[in-house]
Image 1 (cartoon, rainbow, N blue to C red):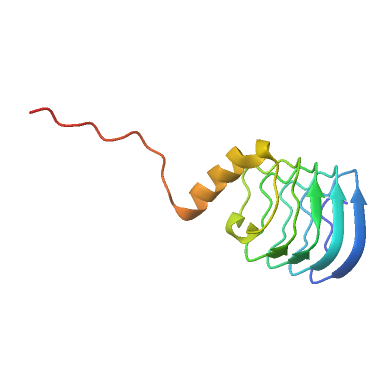
Image 2: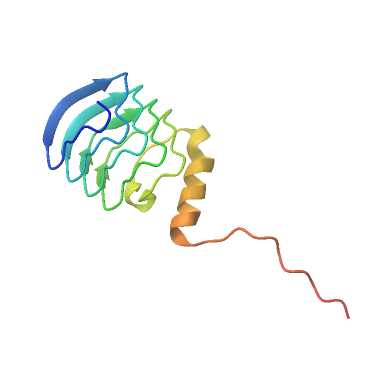
Length: 124
């Protein structure tokens, strides 16, 4: 399913289990109770999608785009979330403790917060 297009699709009670769907286009999709498990979704595009009560678990979401997405009850447990775009649209999602660091890095980048060493003190 690499490069598949579901632009503006409406889906309910869908399961995508195993396999590859890198570069999949889910732009403006409305999904209710969708489960993607153990799927490579590298660079998938969820721009402006509505995901209600969905789970994307144990998937590779590296560099996926969630810009302007609307999510409710989205579970991302076990998924690789390095380099996510549109991370601020994922409010209310659920993640595993091991996902906190990559998600935190994405949030810092999205908000423009810089992590730097403290400035040196001038000696008198």
